[in-house]
Length: 128
Length: 128
DNA sequence: ATGGACCTTCCCATGATAGGAAGGTCAAGA
DNA sequence: TCTTGACCTTCCTATCATGGGAAGGTCCAT
Image (cartoon, rainbow over the protein chains, first blue to last red):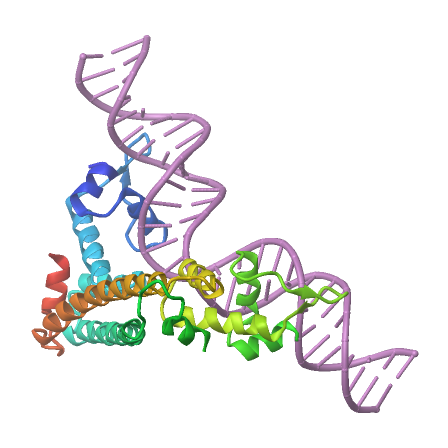
């Protein structure tokens, strides 16, 4: 399986597969004599794991941690849960931050006429 | 007023003030004979505007747009409101995305024992 | 044998910010 | 007056995750 097929099968672009290899997130695969990377289904499975991890908003370093736990048959599920819940807290903090921004802006926009006249509470607020 | 004082007065770091100048977001200030940047209160005001804009999550390009509207005395408030409401929609989309991630993870974490045992629905989900 | 679809490595770009090196300037105190 | 330390200058580097593209090699079907 070439890198293009592994990309199609995993949903991770060939570009990112090479990148993940270069930073040691995934192991270097076998090569053909011509130097082409060759992937087995096991490696595609790992790529899918990484992809799902990233889609849930984990950083690559967190993906590295989760991959290690996944491969460690003797892991404690508490360790996985701890990583997951910490990430939930990070997400919640980010959400609260964005909601505060949106709330402020919605309020300002409500008090702005939004017509041809130049006076605008949004700009007045930005100007302090 | 030196760049350090302008930074303290505006809340924008000296590093970022120089960067904003380099990308043309703010105008190049006067210089002393020795080459030091010299800021007037007007320019500090502009910096504060940019800072507030950034704190509300607008991109630098959006800040550029809002700055231009701020300086245009003949603007229509509708133009400002449009930019603001578009940004609210962007924020809402981002919030929804993060909430989906957090929701999935909270659900997975709830079904995970979180003890010494290795079986973990979080990892099972990531593995697909 | 040729063409096109693939692969390789290497470099560059993004967006916003920070860190640091090497060197010049300024003001205050000895 | 000299020194010292706090400031300033420019330039280069890094972050994080991803994509784009060039130059060149490989593979397979026609």
